Amino acid sequence: MAENHKKAAGRLCYLCNQRRAALKRPKTLEQICRECFYEVFEEEIHQVIVKNQLFKPGERIAIGASGGKDSTVLAYVLSELNRRHNYGLDLFLLSVDEGITGYRDDSLETVKRNEIQYGLPLKIVSYKDLYGWTMDEIVKMIGLKNNCTFCGVFRRQALDRGAALLKVDKLVTGHNADDIAETVLLNILRGDIARLSRCTSITTGEDGPIPRCKPFKYTYEKEIVMYAYFKRLDYFSTECIYSPNAYRGFAREFIKDLERMRPRAILDIIKSGEDFRISTSTKMPEQGTCERCGYISSQKWCKACVLLEGLNKGLPKLGIGRSRGLDNNHMKDVKQSNGTKNIEGKQCGSLDF
Amino acid sequence: MQLTLEFGGGLELLCDSVKIHNVDVSPNNEVDKLTMKDLLVWVRANLIKERPEMFMKDDSVRPGVLVLVNDCDWELSGQLDTPLEEKDVVVFISTLHGG
Image 1: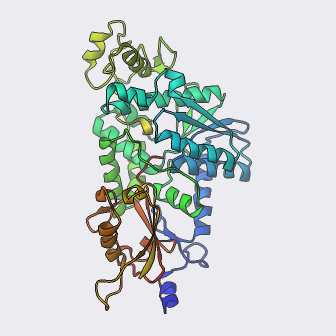
Image 2: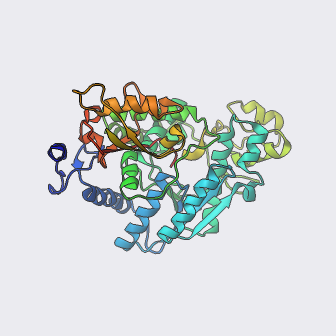
Image 3: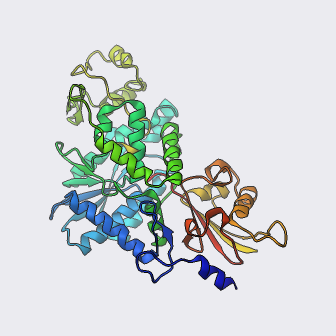
């Protein structure tokens, strides 16, 4: 009787019509089996890579690896596709050690296991080495307000520095469709036109030293997690101990509510972001380089240097928040190099675009 | 009814960091079958030790929490109406933690 019931509940896979369906795809609402799921999941990512010409044969590629679900699945799938389709890529894992005890030290252990499991060389760059400060030390000084700004600004640059050390041609990150839809919404809410116009690009920074791309741009979070679960991939999932992350949290919850009502909504929001056209008369910040460290910056000094200056001088509020006055009062020498508005750091930079 | 419940993706932190729970859950009365809806109420009352809002919203799981019954997406078996049977394995995975 029990068996009968289970069989009745178990519909056949929409694609192969042979095996029992194991999940409902959010993108298409198709009910498919595990084997067909692996196939379509991997094939779609392959098609995104090919169509958008994300890689060229012989390139060295760093995978930004946090030990979390997205980057773990990305490392696994990318090394699989590289072999299967002869991309001819040299893949590396690149991790940032922010110096957060009880969080990053644990997740780095996951990345170290991934290094062995997937046979990909791992490079870890630390805030301590790059900036002289760990996040633990920064939080001790500035408290739990704005700490995500420091972390986000520092992480973005740390990944670039690590990529330069590895001499890679490109950096790939595990940002998924849900993340991008969320960022589109956040950039609209913040009125951040500059970021809105580039947050849906699959490749960014092509004019800079190390372009970044997002092979999971159209991949649903649900499918990434299902893939990791079915394949028993080893990933780390603990919320950062310093991240209340309220603002992004609201957008995230909203996206998830939308998805429950209509899963296509996620792709639709990405499409809206892509189709957004910014009036040519809108003044956009000009990209220059930081006079201090040479990193790309729309100001005289890059955000990381301003934040670091504040930490080292015992004025940690420097460069934080919307009050440009603070910058001007404390740092007469840091004049804005052009007349455009300072682009604010995001509240939590783990999803910086 | 003997069930195996597994919490992942960070949800285990809500129940004393224990991932796998072998539990015995009884239906409300002898006639009724146990459904996922009943199980969620039971889990919330008996296993979740903190921040229940991370696990549930209204009478279902919080959006972004994946549920599998015997390794099958519960969206295929009727979500809250999914009937449960002896020795079933129910997995809850949060997708809400960082990537």
